[in-house]
Length: 296
Image 1 (cartoon, rainbow, N blue to C red):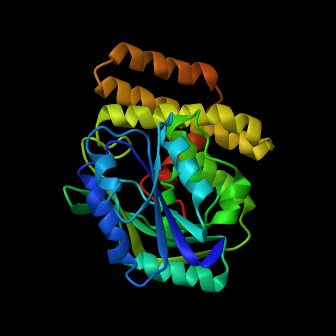
Image 2: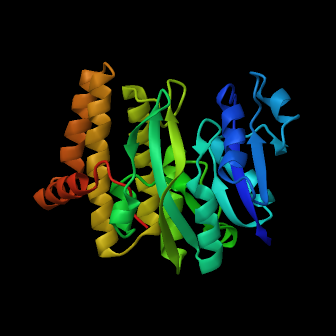
């Protein structure tokens, strides 16, 4: 790995038309940096592959089973000491260059900046990582924004590959591993990343179906965490998170036109977690973290 290189990894499948802006945002945000952009394409059929073959990127062609398999391929090819994950429909923004400089100078394991979510090009949410210290609870209940972080490549490889069997829950699962392994973390109070909400996004689609998918992934992640986190305090957190995710999934099902399935989800929550203590803690953690960044 080379200390002077920042590796930017991008899993991609049918990324048009957003991928053009995503790639251009790299040179706009880090105009003077020694940057490599590695794109793992899983078998695009919308013209993305033809575009990428002539773009200033290192291209890894699929097929792969999921975006996380593509992400793992890109990470395995990274040459830089530090790494950033850029979605093919999002943007790096100006603060990323300063975050990279600060992270290198401090020899930190993780450097965190602020992220924003934009709808139709207009920001409507901004993280507040500066306001809290990262913890297991914050990574579970708040918004993790893994993309607004520069991560030491060696630490990421030590944590192991992103899981490919728990859907979108792989983001939180990896952040929990990195949190436990990291020794030094730094923060820059600048915007470094923009998530774009649009109808085709799996995580930022702003539909009840996309919300249901996210909570499905959270519940898949819970099953994994029960084997990875064994302390009593960890188990209590996981129970509270599972309860909140089950209720949130049921709510999404209701508004997605499946009221009976939604009722079944609520009954399952009562059956699996009858303790008032779990409900009280789940409600408290949900209210404390809802809409907030997970910290640094």
